[in-house]
Image (cartoon, rainbow, N blue to C red; front, side, top):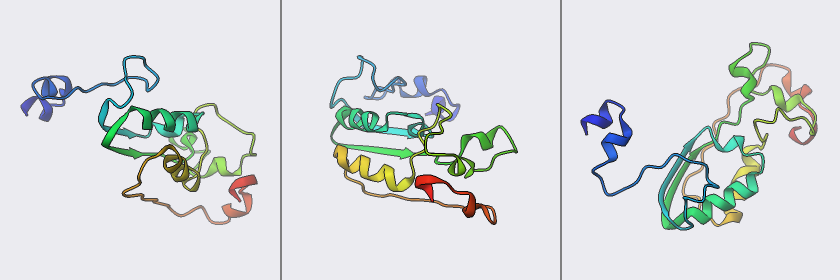
Length: 143
């Protein structure tokens, strides 16, 4: 336990009957139905082929496994430039891409998990307040 408290995950987990793996979901080292617990934080919004990613995640999960994913749906440019805010990319055209974020909205993500076979036990959507007047700038499918 002391190793975990100090942030040394590999050392802290080494004597437990589990494996901690950090890898790409398409890695051949991951066998189908081999994962009991899966978690991600601010990762899944980066899969440009989200359908394929969710199908693979489901295939990796063992029956009865538990997954928890936090998906960051804000415009990531806001993290590095004050020129942008969390909703800026909603004003970009439907064909715009920064090549880093899939631009899916919450209402498009949940159905993909359900289609792949996941049973949704809890689903939260935290929405902040858009800048005043920004809704008039929202473009295309986000309108």
